[in-house]
Amino acid sequence: MTPRRKTLLVSLVGLLWAGGLFTAYWWFEIRYIRPFSEQTTLFSGDSLRLPAGLAGPGPIRLVHFWDPACPCNVGNQQHLGELIERFAGQGVEFHVLQKPGSQGRLPDNLAALRPLAGLPGSEQLPASPAVAIWDRDGRLAYFGPYSEGAVCTSSNSFIEPILEALLQGRPVNATHTLAVGCYCPWAGEKD
Image (cartoon, rainbow, N blue to C red; front, top):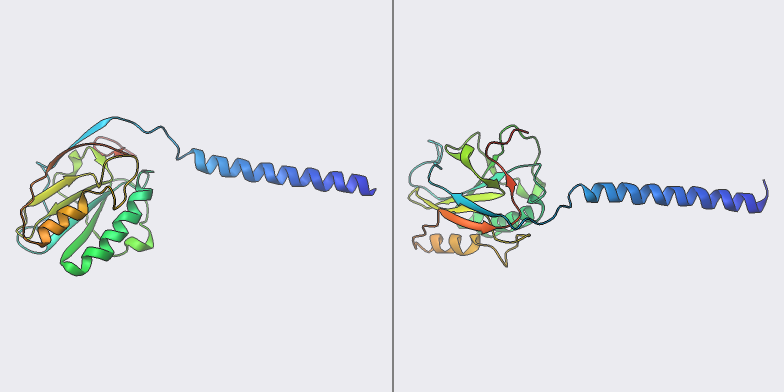
């Protein structure tokens, strides 16, 4: 084989390899890219109840509602890990309810979340990711999203101020929340 043909063949193989890598990268990225919906979601906690084993007086309890197939969880999971690091040692218990019928595994930084088999009223959740927080008396103090907008971080979160208020003994009653953000449907969907 002449040096020119060898160079041409190596260049062609290199271009095909680069094209394959680009196509694979594009495919993996595009499946999670979607337009941000300006649709408003109403979170109402009227029907939510803690399971009998957790109900009543006790520590502050936070329940994370998680749908493994929801791309909105990506930024939310880092924020949730930060919440666990900050508040777990201060008397806040962290639990997780996975969307019924879904399959998935939480990242390692969320291993402290205690899984719940079910939560009365959760079948009526409008969307996830969402969070419910019960105070020390076992009353629902907050139900809704972690934040508004396309991403969730500690800088735009509703959760830190609520947990801080509850830890200081101040009452919180925010069980109906109207928000615009990155959410995936929960109720009435079959995976």
